[in-house]
Length: 325
Ligand SMILES: Cc1ncc(C[n+]2csc(CCOP(=O)(O)OP(=O)(O)O)c2C)c(N)n1
Ligand SMILES: [Mg+2]
Image 1 (tube, rainbow, N blue to C red):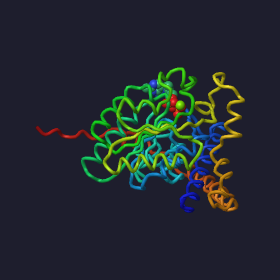
Image 2 (image 1 turned 180 degrees about the vertical axis):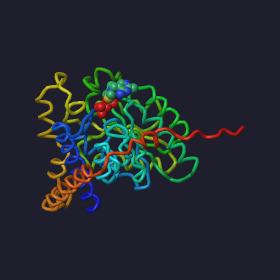
Image 3 (image 1 turned 60 degrees about the vertical axis):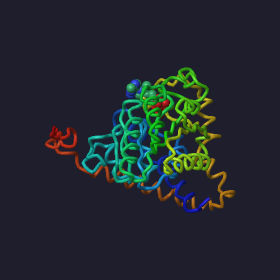
Image 4 (image 1 turned 180 degrees about the horizontal axis):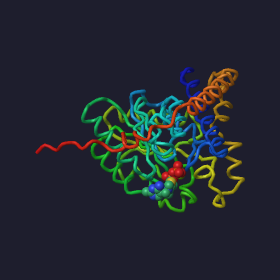
């Protein structure tokens, strides 16, 4: 594989890891507040998927979406300021953790309504097809969201219309406190693709290369006008459903430790560095550069002013559009 791509993959995975760990620290010391759903543990799934896209392609996230725009190469200064509710945030401080969007990198946004991104991504796919702009949309959603009607309706219509969408299920084992196997009637989520006449593939979500290759195949198919695909990454979230929630009785501490110690996406990437032709000292340098970048993003957020109260309603409601008959 291309060396520049692999170093960039590590850079983005490290950026997600360090951004999220810093965010967690800021929450626990009271500088940030609210429900924050972090992506630590899921970095290879995010970055392997996003790097299979062109920069001009679209991406739609979920409620667990700090990592997704970072995977799509968003500037973390605007993201951090947004989490802090500041004026220089990427959505002027009004989006916060669960309503981030960054159109500058094709991140069409996320909301806290589980499954709500699927129709948005499907609509973006329809728009691309009608405009013939050649863009592919990558749609992230969780194992829990795959039980929502929006999942089934979206895949059905996208298949009928051959829309250029890649549906990427991050199967992290749980929807809140519920293990996925207890609520998903099929053996896998990828298997549901059969019902919608599209390819469905399960991939090791901790392996950057495996995710990148699977999503690249799906992106090529979409770009060639052959229609959507469903990819299910088997991954794991290290933190509780949201940082600060106390009930973790639904999973064993040994399970979390096993994923952290034996299936960590950054460690697995480093373990393969020799085989991939990478220099681990460069990976160390990348980690140090990202640490400085995250620190500077926190300072940027802290120094950014609070939004003016007069701006409360701008960018919140749209101006009514005149309907011509
Ligand atoms: C429509 C809807 N139902 C329920 C919830 C409450 N809720 C928030 S996150 C979540 C679990 C989502 O699980 P999954 O799709 O697997 O995503 P993950 O959190 O694991 O990334 C639920 C049930 C919600 N926000 N919206
Ligand atoms: Mg889940």
